[in-house]
Length: 81
Image (cartoon, rainbow, N blue to C red; front, top):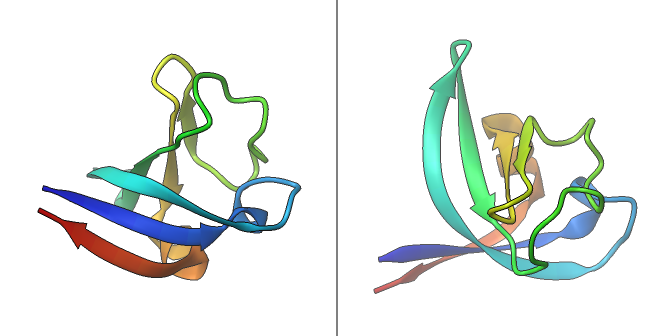
């Protein structure tokens, strides 16, 4: 079971364009809900605007965003069984 998220990369990078990734986790950090998104761009964190994400795991190709950023950036969520 997975959740696909469609969004515009302008919310996490300096580029603009539609993209899809997989939502892989949720956590509470410092009293705030955050979502972990695994991207298809591969390993590394250089493509992200570090002011827009809360954490990047370069070896995994994933990043964390606050709940506010998640709701702002996501256009569509698709449940994959």
